[in-house]
Each structure stands twice: as C-alpha cells, then as structure tokens.
Length: 115
Length: 114
Image 1 (cartoon, rainbow over the protein chains, first blue to last red):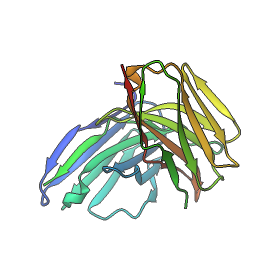
Image 2: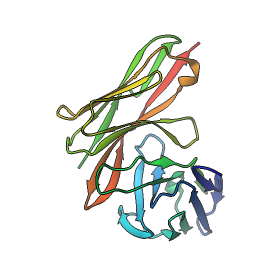
Image 3: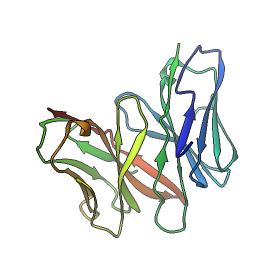
C-alpha cells in the first residue's frame, strides 16, 4: 500500500451506533488531519495531530473522538451521531516543518451516512 | 478569518480549449497555496503547490500563478481533455498558533465536452 488509505470506504450507521474510521499513511509523515466535506460546503478541518499530539480541535462536537496511536495511524471514533453528520470524511498527512507548510496528501475518504 | 472564494462554481468547455480557474483569498499572510483535483465521491489529488515566495508553478498542461498582494491565484489548463473533468479545489495554507492549516474554497466543477 502506498500513500494514504482509509477504511471503510462507505459506512451507514444509526444514531445510536458506535463506529470508527481508520486512516493509515505510508509516506513517513508526522502530521495527520481529519476533514469533513459536506455537500455544497468547503472542506472543514476537524482535527490536527503533530507527532501523535493533538494540536488543533476546530470546535468539533464531542460525539467525534480522534485517536492517534502513532504517526502512521489516525482514527475517528463516532458515537450518537446526527443525520447532519452525514458527509465525506477525509484524512490527510504532511511533513511539518519550521518553514513553508508541507504539501498535504489526502486519502480517498469514507462516505458516512447517518440514518 | 481567512476566506477562499472560487469563481465560477461550474464551467463547461469544449475539448481542446484552454481555460482558467480563479481563486481569491481575503488574508494575504499565507505560506502557500495548493490546487487539488477531486473526482466524484473520491479523495483529493494534489496538482500544484506554490510557496508564498513563488509566482507560479507548472506541471504538464497545468500552470498555477499566485499574486499574494491582490489575494488571487489562477489555474490555467491548456488543451483541455475529457479526462480533466472534475472539481478543482483551491486551498490556502497558513500557520495558526504554530499549526499548519489549509482553508479551502468550495471548488469549480469543470466539465470538458468531447
């Protein structure tokens, strides 16, 4: 596997379910990101991890819980979601540096539908 | 707060034509600007990255320009092909409290007519 992979690619869940999204990067990067893409809205940054430490939570509701056990893996744990949480969830990675921002590489996304 | 606008929202052109996609941003204090391509239901593919000190970048039939002072970037596609049909996203990179952050526009949906 190369690049950034995400599983599952599609997920349908009820509002009372608990599920997790997984992201894995094979690029040797140290920064990982979760984005949400809803219809007709710009991509919204949700969380940022640098060297396994969460460095940004963009006012995301607590029903979304990220986890970064190491620099290659990122999870998004979901519980008691709402129908408006249905969206494409994208993971990205980059190599942070003290100078110019590193180029971000994206996974294929998980299409989430909340019933 | 940085805001990124892309005009037009949708564009259809006949195959073989050259075209320009536009991106504007409100805060010129950026570190870089990235153009992405997104196919329906898929993730993002990075096309070009322009650092704030650069004026343009080229890759094959694609050329992206950056004018920080006026808050504008353009993506020029030469000799368009049906395979270029996709949504093109512009994203501006900034440092917020030491964290790297991309702010995205809503995209231009491009259709190349064979």
